[in-house]
Length: 246
Image (tube, rainbow, N blue to C red; front, side):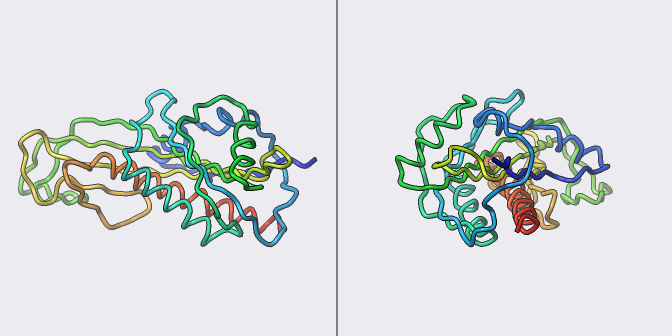
């Protein structure tokens, strides 16, 4: 029996991206147990019809808080959209699990898929680490400097996201393919009492355009957007590997 196909993120030289590449740690084997590297055996078939289970893992050290319902709904919808659009997988059912803690027991996922009437199951695990430090932000909000107008005290939060995908064959009881993607984004905000029409602001690793969230949902939007960028990478890596295997 051939082992599942695994793909990862290329090494980079930047210290910030290096930090992203090691934090948070991989969580997939915490749920599925050891996954040997190797080639997939059935990725050449035309299309898989699969269920989708999205897990927001917060069990690792220094994990960011769990996604709130709006952000969780966002990443779930984006996961289905990206898989349907970019991979030969059609998501036919969204699976729900009240609690799915780590357990290194793939049989739980196989049983869930069989109970829901799907032969294949895509498991998408979203996790992230987060830190926040004091910062001085320019009045104009520019990330390119421009402090001639003065600065305002505030904070910068950095979120490092990891998304891991696994396509499971529920009948055979094993994973067919896995991939991962990583991304980071920052949230600049002013200290308590600071007023500005350009803060808070989110800047993402793979996008030039900033995002201006409300004060109330700034952190949750940071985590959801970073997770979506990591998802984009994970789907891209799986698509590339699928092409090679075919």
